[in-house]
Each structure stands twice: as C-alpha cells, then as structure tokens.
Image (cartoon, rainbow, N blue to C red; front, side):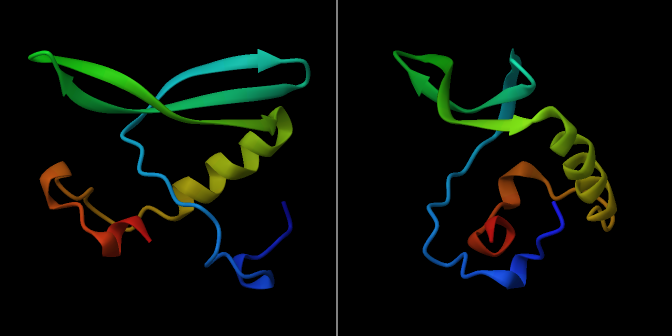
Length: 87
C-alpha cells in the first residue's frame, strides 16, 4: 500500500459510519472484515452489519501500523462524534 491518499480524489467515495469490528473471516489468502453499528430494535440493542471489506492479509499489517501511527492522544468520548471526526 504505497499509495498516498492525495494520489486520487476520495471525495466521491461512499462513506459509512461503523462502531466496531464484528469479526474477521479468512477467505483464501485474504481477510474479510465485517463492521457493525448498534441500534435499538424492539427495545433491545442489536448489532447491524454496515460493510464488509476484503483485504489481502499482508495489507492488514501495514494498515495496522498506519492506524497506530495516527493515534494522537486521548480517544474522543463516543458521545462527541461529529462530522469533523468522521472525515
């Protein structure tokens, strides 16, 4: 993943809000990541699938390192999420 985000226009790509990673499944040499949100349904908190991403297993190492390098301090409280944090 040598691509730099500035190499293409990401403005038109769909954006999905996810609250957590539900599972990781092995698909040959790749991994399927299943992301979810939580929603109240019939008075009960349920997990709803939002998106599945299939990535080469080797790419997950670099992605993990990039996430770790992007942490800049205390995590925001979940009730303070805003559009600025999503972008």
